[in-house]
Amino acid sequence: MSIEFSNYSLRDLSSDDLPIVLKWRNSDRIRANMYTDHIITMAEHEAWFNRMRKDNTAVSKVFQHFGEPIGTINFTQIDYIQKTCSWGFYLGKEDLKPGTGTIMGRLGIKFVFEELELHRICGEAFAFNQASISFHQKLGFKEDLDKYSSRTKNGVEHKIRCFYLNKDEYDFRS
Image 1 (cartoon, rainbow, N blue to C red):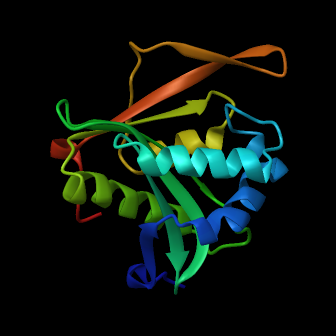
Image 2: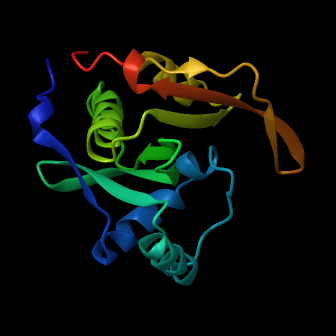
């Protein structure tokens, strides 16, 4: 069974999306792989949203299927001079068709390279988050072996794996 790419899209995050995105963000499945993993209150979430809306170095998108929100992608540290950004993402809805995440990633890459007109996307994942590591690799990201980072989570220091994708190396046909 194939997935029809055209049934999926990205749109700007709106205040109407905050309850569902907060529900996803606070789920155990998502929090386990986030740098900040406490339960977020609606007040914290609204403050984040208001900061994001005013920040010209950040864009938040909702990933949707036939107009139904199923995930989110955040583009941060957008640098229009160096033509770079970082991204973070998750599928909020569970039990989606295999390949749905890949479509989300491809739409995000297309947005960065074609709409924002940037040349490099950077991503990070905890070394224990094999799903995110595989996701980056599947999309053509390369690991930045010269960049070392770590984060403390629950009192334990964890290595962060860093990835990048350059526009001139990306196959838009895939």
